[in-house]
Length: 477
Image (tube, rainbow, N blue to C red; front, side):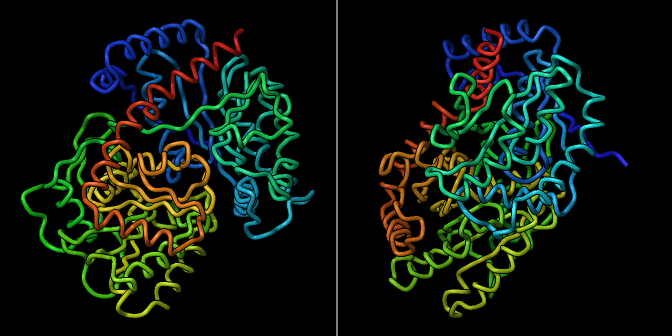
């Protein structure tokens, strides 16, 4: 039974970014692309992670690799497999890198044996595909252990860590002690923020590259009002008929897709009406995203009478569809239990939506419509590596209320591109910020406009690829 999956990617031209970046920036991107193809000289640029669906890495790679292929780079994507115990310990590492204990389970010799056994199982097939001198970009703790064998094989190995903690503590020390032996000889390490870089990383071989979104992907492409309404009505996220639109979207290959499936929604009573203001958080069912805290903040808003009839939608993937997140079901169950504990008057205003994941593009189109329809997008994370859901909402010119943690604070200047809450656990402060935006439509519009401009300047896929181009140039030097 094969261990490793190669995910197919369809090439896409970067020319479509011309209307967003302008002539000068497009010329720079095209020159960088030509130089990179020459520099690679026939070598393949491999990306390896642990899931093809769910999470920011799996969402970024299809577009990034499509644009890389479009300029002539042989860019490919491999997904490893693992045992339940492997994903349990890598989830523990994920929490520890954020400075949190997670389930508190040990990360000792037994866990290292489990980790290395999975690495060995995957390495055999990977080495049959990767040639000496190819470039291999490993993503996150799940793949770090592949570095030594790939280096011995002759590949140029780069490790990218998408998560981290603003302040190191005993938990981050535990995580880095586990991972460091695998990473000491990599050609380079890549982090989303400087604060995440451990002191043992060689500064000359460490670069900071912020994640990005694809403005043309199903999750971020433009949708008109009738289409948004049709998608949300069809999926059951709002009440009523589809209206004049159809639940259609454009796939990455240019073909037309249709939202066929419905969301599984836990609610008491009816779905929100089309004209009901929605407060929306979209994220994995992960305790670090604090979905229970979002409900508490919304409940506080309702009790204060500042809600203006708004309702809350907490949306995440169907928990059975994300293979590398063993905590998803447990977290979702905790959210449902907390929802049941709320008073009826508040519970009827909160909707828990599990979005279909059978077709990742369909899922992305649903998220797109939901974010575009939101009156306010929330990201009440306790810890956050970067926060692509924030980037997505900003691109759609939605006002955002978020915690001042991780990469969120790089994206948003408080009061300019959104509102930041200093204490991620402060439900009252989140409630006050939500009420402020719901009441002040001019503030909401101003924040949304500035947010979109911020993303256009800093966080689109072409800029992301150019930073990798700079890294490859640095490695060749």
